[in-house]
Image 1 (cartoon, rainbow, N blue to C red):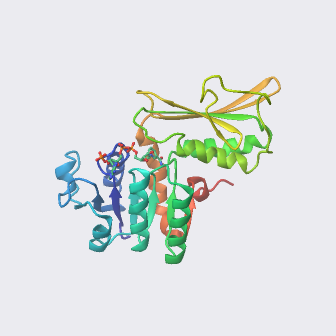
Image 2: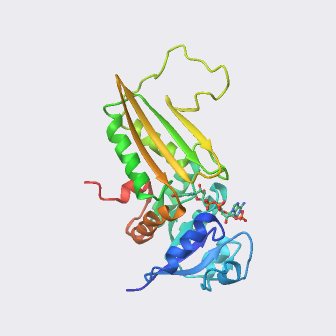
Image 3: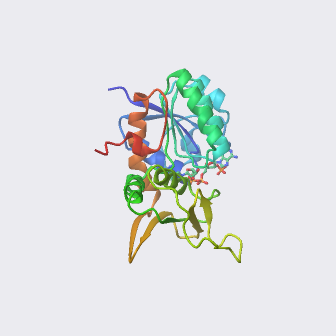
Length: 268
Ligand code: NAP
């Protein structure tokens, strides 16, 4: 079987370095180049001493996709950069797997259009940890019976976007089944702004940022004399690699954009 040829953006980042390890340990995957805002023209091993991979580094995504033949592009950067990279990949008919969180609805719908016109798969997954995806799926199941819900997400203090993509996605999934309702006291007010967290369509989302944390979320459902908590913890970025691996293998089966790893899992 031919190895899947991969381009990775964000190789020096925390997720990027973990992805390089995963790719290097998978005989079916081949890293053919990287996109990085630094180190144009260098080989990956010159920049990341822990790898022997010789993939060339490009600063410009257009030049990268014009120069290298690739099957799958992976983005692990920041939203605006990830959007430009992913657009370039799809326009060059390279399937895309996006782990970068924080894309706007407009960016997602623009990428969906390009993917459909080109007939190319694009998987955007705010969370690649399979346990976290199941947490979202279980939360959706619970919300049908427990409409009073709040989300607490906790991440390391270097994360720049809040709330997390996972929290936003969880709320979106809950909204699909939850009866619309105003939670809390009808005359509730904040004596300190932000005390009740973000309010996404009536569901409160609380974001904590501390050193020592990686990626954690608890979805708490309240009802008469009972609480149901659905909780997931990623203790290391290694936890995201099972889902990333799966998405790389599956993305070429799609001809459109798929948002959320749960849509490529067999959940029957
Ligand atoms: P990180 O360590 O900060 O890495 C970010 C990477 O993006 C670095 O290589 C960084 O390069 C690059 N970058 C930042 N600003 C840039 C710019 N203006 N132009 C070009 N490159 C730029 O972050 P991380 O923890 O690896 O996370 C990367 C992304 O994945 C984030 O969006 C995060 O939310 C997301 N994430 C997703 C999952 C998932 O399961 N889907 C899990 C964890 C994280 P410099 O070093 O030069 O800044």
